[in-house]
Length: 344
Image 1: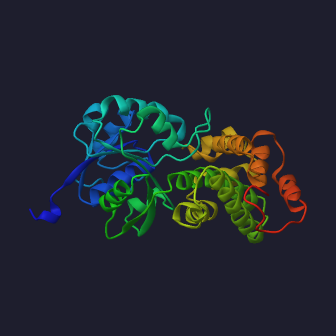
Image 2 (image 1 turned 135 degrees about the vertical axis):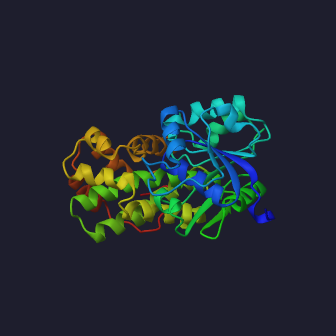
Image 3 (image 1 turned 60 degrees about the vertical axis):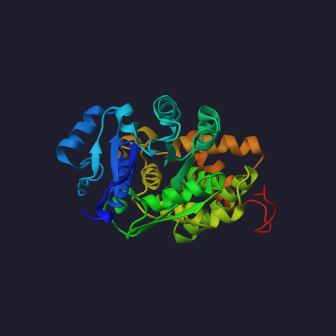
């Protein structure tokens, strides 16, 4: 066996949804032994038997280096890094289990996006609360659809960590001839972008579903980006982060392509579906729905004006018609486009 074919340090991927499976496949393609874990033992048994995640990525066979592991302790045993890929509402509980089971030297990363609803904390703040300073950690984010990563289509993403060397190592570990990872030390900016873009994608689906047209869509994207940046800067992020893959890139992706569950959710609502019916139709977690509440709460806490997010929240939770929200946004007082950081 050549050196290039020798499996590299093992990686544990925790979460076997579409994105967790795609990340596990990509790490295996990049030369790592991978252990894929999920709390759903029956799902893992099907994946192991079929050597594919036929529910989420039916056309993508699992690489030989990817093992299915139903026991969390065994999945973590000896792993150089653990990558969490679960929805934001499940992040804290899984992280607490990982903290008990993983070696303190194990690097920790996550692809979870969104503020914690109960606390308003970003994922890295939850990690600091549970783990202190003993673990290297990073977030994987940016414009990526699981189906396209699974298919091996050219993709770029951002890996952000306060530890630049750790981010760089993870980027090298996941990169291949079809997948390129860039690094950042602005974890606040990257995580804020990942949280806010899901809400705006719901709004884009609502607007398109109501036939508002391309002009409305691009206005929502650009002014939504301004809101994202205002909130991120208020939380300590760097403004330039939001012009990169994890800001503008992820926002455009989720607002314009129907692979986005959040966009499809908005389209279904615009078509007359109730929120519960739309969620059942999609059949997967739609992060933008609870994120609208979480982002609004954080914006209010920080004193940051986010009128688009506020309008989406009113449509989702107060029953205000989306057409009325758009009308209110369009009749707001005229102001300069680039006024102060917290203005609307």
